[in-house]
Image 1 (cartoon, rainbow, N blue to C red):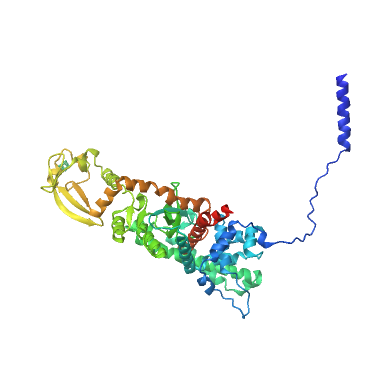
Image 2: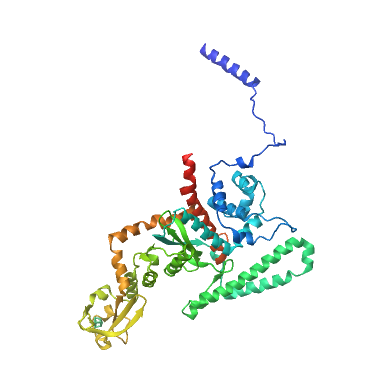
Length: 511
Ligand code: SF4
């Protein structure tokens, strides 16, 4: 009976399904709509794009305005307001966008960009050119921003944390070539530039395409010529003839250098140096270098901060990569309190001894120094007498040597100085400059250790922000000057974000 009822129910439902038709909202893409738009209300009152516009409006942009060609009363198109172009780039960078094409696209539909431009389209060529054609004005802009942040009390210069970070260049590892290959490429590029002058080419593809091709060929030729000049610079740093011949340079970005990355790999990169004020983590100094090591960057980093802020930082804190005896002396001379752990010179000297085949039981600790006689006594009881000194910045190395006669007949020779064939074993006694000794003692104090512990949180924060949020893991531009400008734009965006977070946003929290 139930079975029969069930069959009746299903039969009813099937019948109902046959007659039921769902009703959905239609999608009409053929209609034309005319909607009123209040541009001012495209973004809310507390939208950060308004903060960027407000902040840029407070800056002195005279240098930018002086470079505008369009003037009232003369023919030609009006120029875009530099305040708008700067705001567009700053806002775009803060959202992780570093491409002129992408900004130009966003100006067509994104409310924040539409609000900034007042619904005006901006050509990507105009945006891209603006980013790289005002180097001095951009430097001035960075100083202006720091002046405003300083006036807001966000910078004290009491403690500046400095750090370096390798950022990949816009070139791959397989673009590196030796001189012969570069010369071949250069010859081809020159021939191409000459062939571009042929008027028949313009008839085939049109004058605009020819102009673009001419520019591309000319730029390629210039890049290859630059590659040869960079090759000479690198060769000048190489000690041997064989090493000089091995030098290779990227033909895509000749100014990039192969550097070790944080992930352990090697690749064409630039070394980005950032100084951060510890008070509110504002970036107070930016530099880009071609040098893979940080040792040589500290003094110039301090000078950049001094130049842009008008006074030197009271204290600079770095990791061990910046600490050398030269830097300790230089900071002392500049009156800057320098905090940073000494490097690993002991480990390095052990590496040298290891390479020379010296047994660990015959390392310098096994030799006894007699200050009265100014001589060492070796494990075999022989004397190593003074053999000259070498002065280096922050340290004097005193050399002591055993007599060749003693060593050559010594039963320990194979362990002590296996590679010495005609000379006795040497020991070097290094004596640090008092300034270096004082630095080492300072770094042993709890106060210095406690300051150093704060370094990571302050110095690495902007680096992480630039890489993670702005996406500055790889440069979009090429060449030392242009990548320097790219970093500067990113740092401007970072600093203005700090102002928005600390000064602008709190006023909306109170409303
Ligand atoms: S090799 Fe020379 S320095 Fe070394 S233990 Fe013998 S005598 Fe001394």
